[in-house]
Length: 390
Ligand code: ASP
Image (cartoon, rainbow, N blue to C red):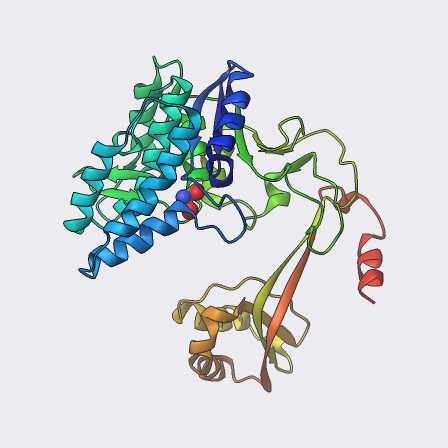
């Protein structure tokens, strides 16, 4: 049995959190490969180390004095090292970082140091080997992640390693230039490591006890979801790139709470014959949409109508989120922030492409998704949902 464990920033924000993490890892010897994020917020209003690094590098790039900002970052690590009573100093690493910032090594390099340093501290504390992600996670010259090459390099590197820490979020190109995934990308590293070592489980430790059936800011004490399939999950909750490597290998993801390690969390699985506890697995919502409503008589018998409309969105480099339609109406939902500055081009494009009878826009819209693998076998779900809305 092999378990890959990824710990998010809030799980590693302070010495106290590091101790919880070590307890969790030592509680099960199968937890062999650890992927840490950079230290996150210790309290509301605190700043994540990744954001401190971006800010510090911006100063360096602008040719301003960044010594103070870098010292603040070092203080975050020193506080952890001291709190854990480690015989470790990051002086050398910070000297190198200072020099690289001065040489303008790039924002990706800057951001990656959060995970890099946290990995060194965690490996030292656990007594695990430190494997620098720059040596095993590969990106091409254009900065795209190279899945197959990484898998080869990483699996052979970790083949004979019993216990290791591989920092999340970054990797490097062949020429050594450090590259990062998008924000929140340590989830992706965890998934890549799980695939490479053929893990039995990918545990993703965070500060909530898994996915909840509803938003706790709206519903008081919502239940946690025991098991959810990738399909139910959609792309919105975890980064799609984080799911892909493990999904392809049939490795389940278990979302767990570092602050409540006894909670079982949520299992994310390809498929399960366990009957869902509830017909509806969860309800999710997203704000910030605009809709383009198009009406035209006989739209239903006009061949290629939908394609021509969508072509206008593609030509304007816009993706669409949802597209409900009727016999003579079609509505396209887009992210308002992406759409706003292109709206007039889209409107004129649609006029030219399909000559609608009517075209109007709405904004400030939210989408609500009701999700559940049990729904298709249950009568009356739609009626209950619409009843609740009414
Ligand atoms: N530290 C990075 C971020 O703040 C990556 C991560 O935490 O997953 O986005």
